[in-house]
Image 1: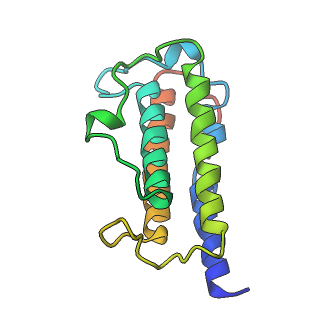
Image 2: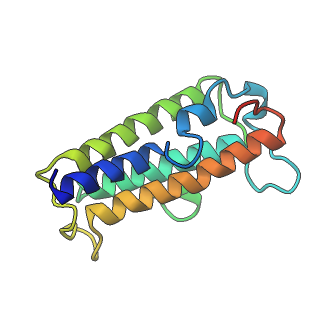
Length: 160
C-alpha cells in the first residue's frame, strides 16, 4: 500500500474517532433530551452548545477545504448557538445528522486520490487538506471529550 494511501486511511480513522476514546455515535446515542440544554455548575456550555459548535466548526473546515467562495462565520459568535437549549425538539437530531454528513464528506475528500493532501489550498494562506483533516480530527476529539464529560456530570452516561 503506497504511503499516501496509509496516511489517508489513518486520517479517516482519526476523523471517525474510534481509536482511543468513545466515538461520536457512542457519545450521542440515547442522549437524554432533558439534559441536552443543561449547563452543569461551572460549565460554560451545555451538551447542545458543544454538539452544535462541533457541527459548525467541522462544516466550516469542510467548506473551506472544498469551496474557494466559502465565507467562515464570524468568530466566536458564529461558531456557537445563541442559547444553551436546542431551539426545538428536532434540532438535536438535525445537528447530529448534519455532523455525520459533513464528516462523511470530509472523509470522501481525503479518500479521493485526485486531491493532493500536501498541496496548498489555493484560496487559503498556506493550509493543506492534510492540515484541515488533522484540525477537524483534533477539534472533534477535544469537544467529544467535553460532551462525554458533560453527559457524565449530568448523570446521563451509563457506558464506558
